[in-house]
Image (cartoon, rainbow, N blue to C red; front, side):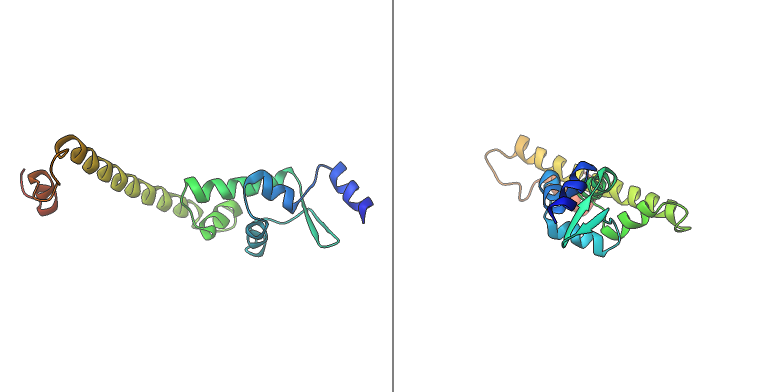
Length: 141
């Protein structure tokens, strides 16, 4: 048992708990990604999963795309599968880019509204503000 663990470690493999710690993930999340077919351990020994650099990098990519790309695991799986896996590969990516662009516009609009409140309503609430009413009702303001 220990001999296999030593062999895995000498091969540059890390057990699931160490991978989880290094990436700031839960081991259960890694196991879930495995169930979804997003990652596979290099080996299993005595019930422990062992991951190499390529698998750890893939887990990092999944984590990054979930957080920063706001992508679903389904989208991530399709993109990681590559263009040969699906004819819609480029469409998946372009659709996601458009969705992120729309989200960015909404976030920027919200920030603009809050900046207006901070700059012009320090003493009074913004209820009844012509600036907001013009945006809400689409009237000049």
